[in-house]
Length: 77
Image (cartoon, rainbow, N blue to C red; front, top):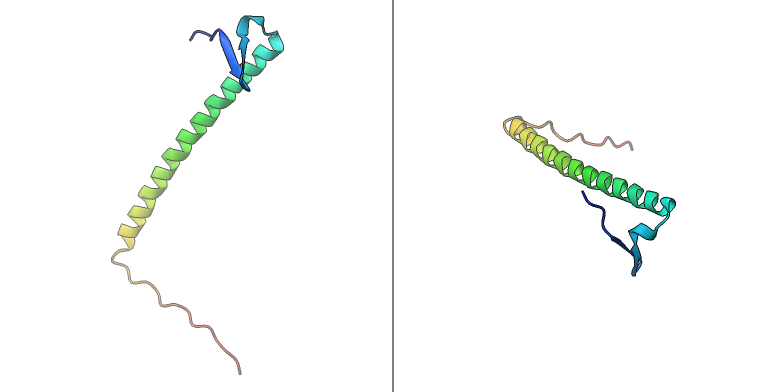
């Protein structure tokens, strides 16, 4: 993947070729972090879908099971 020629940052434009190694390293770090955030968001979406499927399966499995009665609180006089 080709590196862009310019960096737009805080409403300013910088020529990548003029940046020092420290600035370029921070750009790479940001790209890595952004990719990891995207991956984590995708993983959360997958886990959310799986959770919904498990809840649906549990609902179906419990459809013909009689629930236990609610416990009544004991009062003392």
